[in-house]
Length: 217
Image (cartoon, rainbow, N blue to C red; front, side, top):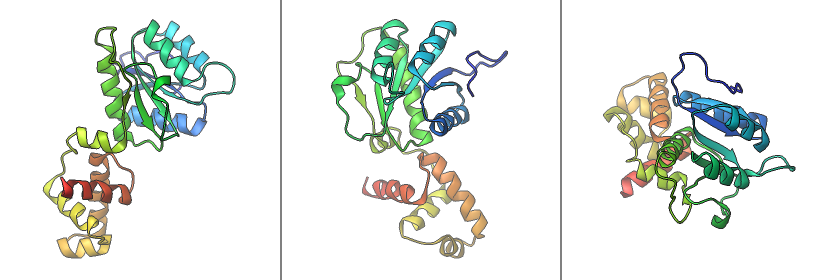
């Protein structure tokens, strides 16, 4: 979605997305839309400022650090948005290590690749932070897939989903799981899709890592 105006009767929170790579911009918008937000997606910081000036009621900003070579980058945009509009900001980067001094206080940081569940959690947190008083925490809030997954309480799996996850962690194939639990392979795939959604992961390997952390916890 690239429209910069709210559709009539649409009460979903508006989230501004700034990403200069087309496919990533579409992915971010799709994740937000699936999570119940109305994304407004643009390619540059300058376009984002135009939207901010023209569209009232934006709830949060999600911006990549590295935008077009010319003009503002994601850091500068985040600072302007917090100073002038006071809305929550999520900064996205492909770099795992980042200089915290470049991030405005109270900014949430997320590394690529991005999982939809993690993005939605951070946007929700950013909206809450933006709704507070103008004063911000002294340091930026750095978030990773692991810390967010731990803070969220790991999500709620059904007993059957937990059984499937336990067998996945053991290295069982879909066929093995189906035979052990008396299910069809298609049903196992359905359960896996549900598990991925609850855990905020996108593939089997990531689900195994989360499952192992649950066992250790």
